[in-house]
Amino acid sequence: MPEGWRFPSKSTTVSALWHLWWCGIPADRIDGLRFLKGFDMSVQVDEQYLSKARTLMEHLVDIVKEQRLLPVGVRNLWTTDHLTRDQVLQRAFLYMFTQIHPTRSLREFDDKRIGFESYLTCMYNLMSRKRLFTKR
Image (cartoon, rainbow, N blue to C red; front, side):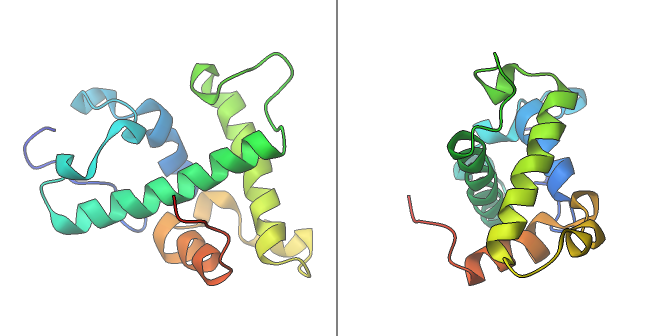
């Protein structure tokens, strides 16, 4: 990792993290964040952020697979273009939201648009409270 590089902060949105997860940060010569390991982090809090981000991203990928959200003919998320990945994320996020809040309306979902949700302070906390994760 480049010296001084830090994992995206806790205020990073789910959609921004999704993009970094698949595309990385080419300007810093960092591949998709999905390839990082805890030992790659030079600061302990970044190792925790990576762990929480991985849990959330893996859960979203599981939703994509289980709900068959990929477009016809597409086999892997990492081989799709940015627009397709964003569309798939929107559908997975909506599904996850309805699982977390089964009685809430889609209007309420619109009020919590994915572009504004912090991956740590919002989604991970909501999901862990609802116990949607299984330990791997």
